[in-house]
Each structure stands twice: as structure tokens, then as C-alpha cells.
Length: 182
Image 1 (cartoon, rainbow, N blue to C red):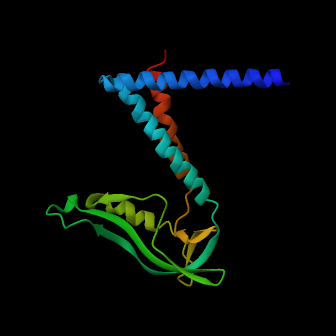
Image 2: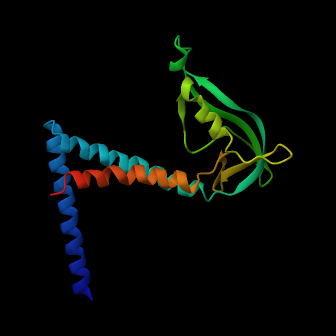
Image 3: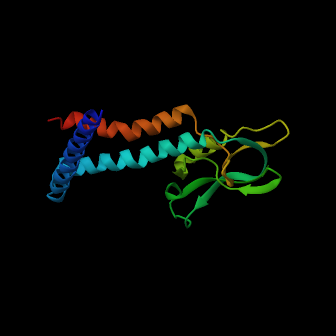
């Protein structure tokens, strides 16, 4: 039994060494201005950033729900006033209250998907705001972190959004592998 475990460790070490050698080679190519090295690190960044986002969205999708009261909501300007209207940026904004285990909390986060839109794309934020679940009496669903109830969102990540983020994480690396297959 020790022999197969030892063989597994040797195999894992060889794979790890190959990966490290490849990363070093891609770093050298990137520093030399080669497209392959640059694209490798762009794809690696997408894999790490979007991979973390997928993990976070999967966690948030399991958060419990509390009924809350929406105090304010809408689309707000961010930054200074731009002379050209189409250059102005907007974000979805909200203020809501909810109770968890007898404690009153206030939240501001609308969705795990933070979107900044120009004036011309402001309709996307308005559409995002329609994704909130509203009760007949005017209340809203609030999804909160059971380990830290002060962290909350009004919109839970859906399967399509998680799949889209996953494709953004894995897609570039697959295209890279296809383009630069040895």
C-alpha cells in the first residue's frame, strides 16, 4: 500500500513540476513581448478571478431568505457629472431592512453581480432591479449570510448567471489550449 501511495506522490510531483516549468516559460515569453506568454496570463487571470466569482455565487445561492422592507431603490449616478450624457456612469442602489433572529439589519447590496453602466446602458440596471422578489404587501426577499447576517443581497445568483461566469472562467483557457496546443 505504501508503494502505490509513493507512486502517487511521485506522479503528483512530476505534474506539479511540469506546471511550474510551463508557467516560468510563459513568464519568460511574456517578458519578451511574445503573444503566447501574454495570452497565457490573461487567461490565467480570467480563470482565477471568474473562478472565485463562481465559488462566491454558489455560496450566496445557498443563503437563507428573510422578508425585508425596501426603503429606497433605483439607479444612481456615480462619479462626477459628465458633460456628455453617454459618459455618465450608473449603478443599481437600494436601502432595505430585514430581521434575523430578532436583530434588525440594514443592507445596501442589490446583487453579487456588481454592474456599472453608461447612460445608454442604464436599462440593464433597471432590468436587474426587476429581478428582486416582491411580496404583495410591498416587502422584498433578502438573502443573508447565515454566518454574518449583516451581509445580504436582494437578488440571488441564478443558474444561468453562474454558468455564464463559469464559461468566462474556463472558456479563455480552453481557447488558449486549442490555439497553442503542442
